[in-house]
Length: 336
Ligand code: 5GP
Ligand code: MN
Image 1: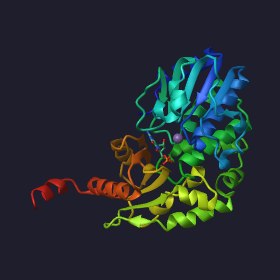
Image 2: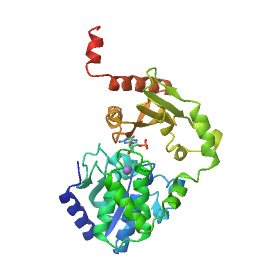
Image 3: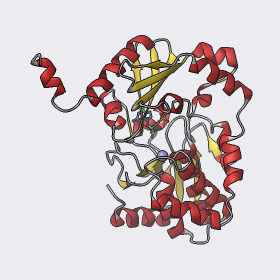
Image 4: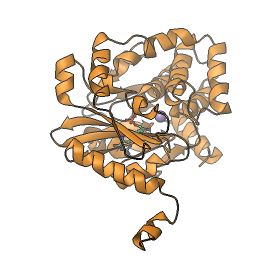
């Protein structure tokens, strides 16, 4: 659904009216989640508002350079009530983590998001699944609240769009994404400096993890699905953690002929986080939703119980069904 002017006006009015804000995003925050929160937080603070920014998980190492990153808190304030809780880049409240889901210290709830699977759960919803990144929507809000926003805000917005478009690779990198990114560059954002922090400052341990992960590569018999697995044992061997698994799923997707790629990340015994990526028209958000997750058409995720072998077999089967030409299932059932 495209950006709705009424939703936009209601959210901006609520921001002007409220004095205290709790901004939060999804667990394991990515560049869009962190950049969107920080851009909005800095703008609200400049308007004299009290702002707390929360995520249960730490800001990943590649996003700690973002201006204001140190304001993220990993504990919810006790005994404080906020006029407005804004969930950013969060398709459903459960994605914000168990503590925040149970938190009641706010008067109104708002959501700024661009996920296809967002069900408009808040009182105020600024949801546009055509936006490349939540940062694109935050840009509109920030530009309205404070047209003279500073370079720090611009770096956060640029980074949100950069990372959610896969460095402007993906189909969501539309004219709006380029236009806003271009404006941020005009304001002084240095693309190489941002890229150096985000993509060119890997610890050696991440490359060692990559080496182990690539050895797990599996390809479905028809060559249209591929996956890799990350186990806790690999973390222990290389001194890494879940934050080092970002973008590893792009390797199986990069194979010619692969339509759907996924990564299994072991969370605990027989419990995996799955990251799906697709190319072209395959809707992995629908696939993830079948497994209780969600996301975007070309990038989605969910959690599943079972051994990695069981999960891989299950997903390969599902993908095969998904890619079967219409009528193939009925033809097969009829023995044709
Ligand atoms: P990633 O694979 O990078 O963790 O996530 C890709 C996309 O899928 C993101 O937009 C993210 O919000 C969504 N996603 C990932 N895991 C889950 C999940 O467990 N539940 C839901 N609803 N969405 C997810
Ligand atoms: Mn996003």
